[in-house]
Image (tube, rainbow, N blue to C red; front, side, top):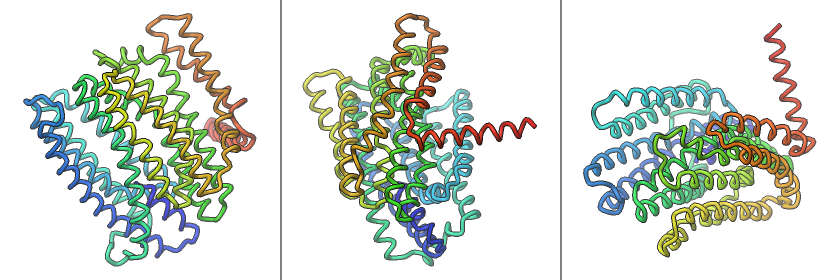
Length: 451
């Protein structure tokens, strides 16, 4: 949802009109407070149905589940209200500010994870309360930092709210919210299906798979946070061709930054899970591997999402792409109702991600003039040789070694091969120049520190 505010802030920053930026921020903050109240109301009303016999929860833990659900609802509200502040940091390309808050969040979560072991009451309730408190603390940190560093981040909502901007932002944020809800519906809809048909053990496997995928997605997500403001600003300056080129690069580098960890983990998934978990739920390895494939497929066109957001014509895109991804829920229900095992639902999850990617290409060709042949040449053809290289190296090691400690040398070896193949076979001239400049700057800084 932060893309809505970030898009307007980045788009208008080239004009350097502080009053416009103040109006955009204030209007966005007011809008997100309203959205927060609406969503929390919907979540709480949904809870009345979910906990009234729909979900498969042991009766002795039902009250605990309800309590944690309320804490989750609070976390959602705090997270939504913080969106304009994170969008302001992103639009100003302040990765340091975002990183500081994220590091504090991680440290607090680590403290909670360690402390919770010594708690003798209901640990799940304590966990839910702690997560809600962390969301609130993060919001306060964002408010204090942005209000003190950026003039546009004013809290005087009545003074700077603009009705015209409300209309534009409401439409833009509304369609982005629809896209976000279809994403939530896809993920949680599959979770509910698995719970209803198979119970909590399969839910545990799916939950672990989603946790693995979210951690694997960290590197590419961080890169996209850095490049998205540049895509928005380039479009705001009227340079459509350069904006589309940046979107292609975002997709390619996003895929590489995910694949260098995800592909080795797919080959070593059983060993990783055995080291990580005392007891591995059934289907966990298959779920993890397939969902990693799904998010790699998504990364192949992830830059196009930013390009469409920059152009601003998102209505048709959100309807088409969101609906395609959401189709896994009714299709998954039909698959499970026909007696097929749960793995077929996750296969469908991956297939619909691919179909949504194809839709992205076509929609951006229509709305933004994307040359699909050029995209295939620059992105798909570029990622193919390094991908085949890392798969071949992993397959070779797996076929000659059965050691449970194989992952400790197989993963570093394959990652090294992958990066070498990316540099020589996966990058275009301009992309290789960017990498050369980064390496040269890093070497220069390292040399100066040693002097």
